[in-house]
Amino acid sequence: MADYEYTTDLDVRFRDLDAMGHVNNAVYATYLEQARADYYADVVGVPLPEADTVLVNLSIAYQRPITADETVTVALGVGDLGESSVPMEYEIRTGDGVAATAETVQVVFDRETGESRSIPKEWRDRIARYAQSDG
Image (cartoon, rainbow, N blue to C red):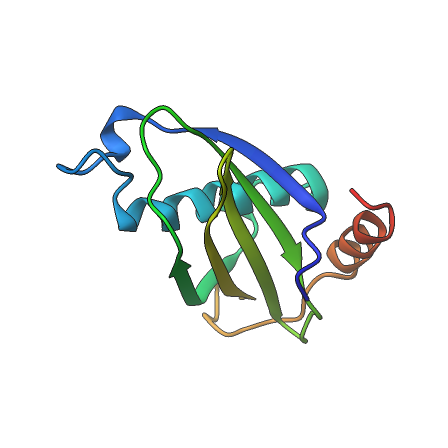
């Protein structure tokens, strides 16, 4: 896929840093979560807590550390939607280039049954329109 049509900027917070002065590896997942939350709000039109999705897969490939004085940009692209799954690919970037790449899959579910359910048509339409508009 590697077509990152959506970007969001994040500040490195002091609490993100480990004893070595680098962003802790686990915080990269938090940056991805914030990018998903921004994407759902901005593109899908639904706040992430109300989206009724669960993260079922997360993979991060670290390429270099991020330090306190850097601004982070997370670039996000949505792959081919499944019946209930929303695959996303990411680049976590700073001024020096790509710090990590990542992939996630979220599944839309029914809160009452706990089972997966189809992605709402309006979400599909908004995601497709946004991708076609080049962000």
